[in-house]
Length: 292
Ligand code: COA
Ligand code: MG
Image (cartoon, rainbow, N blue to C red; front, side, top):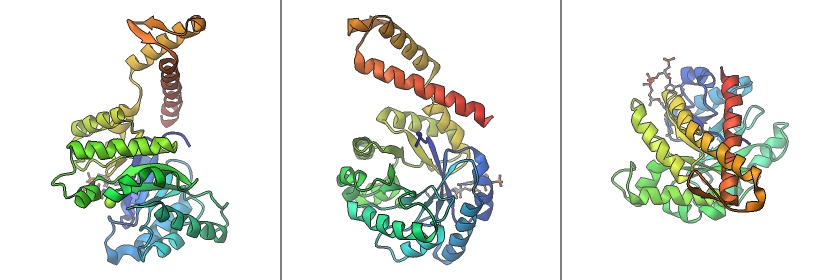
């Protein structure tokens, strides 16, 4: 699956948001059945999300955040949303590998009942506790369905007794550890939400920091956040230009092994990174042309 920069949460009980969300331009949608939905609205939300999946055509990939393993509502969530049109599930509050494998098994049954290929529904695991973070490398390796680890900063802050989930060294450590755990199993690391949805500059700064930490995408709560995040995750013109010079210099004299370009040492890992930047810039150009 290609890298997905923007994962927009859409509350499962808000019909107007559900209707318009696919047209807002995010790479993925996460219809929420967990913490954004009041208990009284749960049944209605399951029906609304099920109907949205049936109507899904092109556009963003559709994920649903269900209740986690061990929660009484999980089976009902699965019955309502495992159907063609569903790309994957977001599992909240994953503390250990068994929280993933339990869902994996129920999913396989549901898939055959829904006439879907077994194993086709993907998973993203939310890490939002001290235990989840410690177990993150084992969680990341626990199912071939997994495509991403996501950082749930609000619940993480509650679990660790932090006053704020904004910044601070513990929060950066948690985010960094999640990136490394995801990379160890070749999963995408997806960063926390930024709650001040009327503050694009603050969001751009936090996204820039996330990019520096190694995240490939960010969870979002409002459509206004999509374009900001896409802009930050796009390679800059300078990065593309510098990568092009590195690759050209290396390909002109591969037998040299190491060389100097723009006053900097270039060797194989630098060339690999430069090629990766050029490939992702080319892909973005194609998808931007498609977007409009
Ligand atoms: N998904 C889809 N559409 C959304 C949206 C979302 N998450 N958030 C806002 N919109 C839509 C609104 O419906 C509105 O549409 P309209 O122009 O057609 O009327 C438009 O975007 C502008 O919304 P705005 O008035 O600025 O915000 P709001 O007050 O309606 O909603 C929130 C603000 C925070 C309540 C809302 O963004 C939200 O519920 N976000 C998701 C929360 C969530 O899922 N949390 C769980 C994970 S952390
Ligand atoms: Mg949470």
